[in-house]
Image (cartoon, rainbow, N blue to C red; front, side):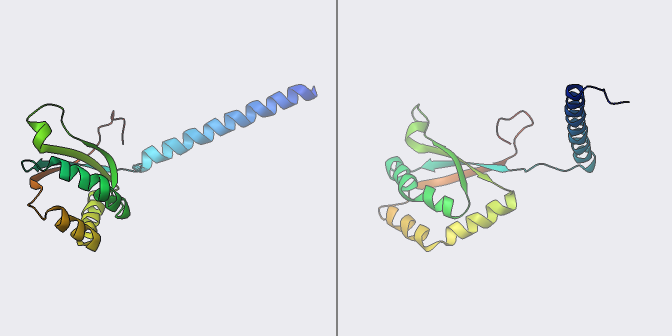
Length: 151
């Protein structure tokens, strides 16, 4: 391929050449990633369902809002959201939240550190001075689907 004679045409030719070179390089990088089987950053989500003892929902919500969420952040536990169902009877005894973790192993490590945190132990003991807030907890680790908005 020969270069054009006019200076403006040379500039246009060079711009086109650089754009095509960039696109070819980007395509090669995508191809190498696909061939090497590299996995983009993967997160695991943890769904937690708290079955709250009768009359204790307000205390549990207050504990999360006033203390637990901040302690989660301190222990690298990313809160996605907290919910209480709208309809009775679940609105009286079910508290739901989702955490995001870099991996399941990190989640277990972070939970152990959270449970051992003296501030958490104090907050829990004080909030349960008149009885346990939660009867039991269900937890599920979840992987996002390929079409999920969160990955």
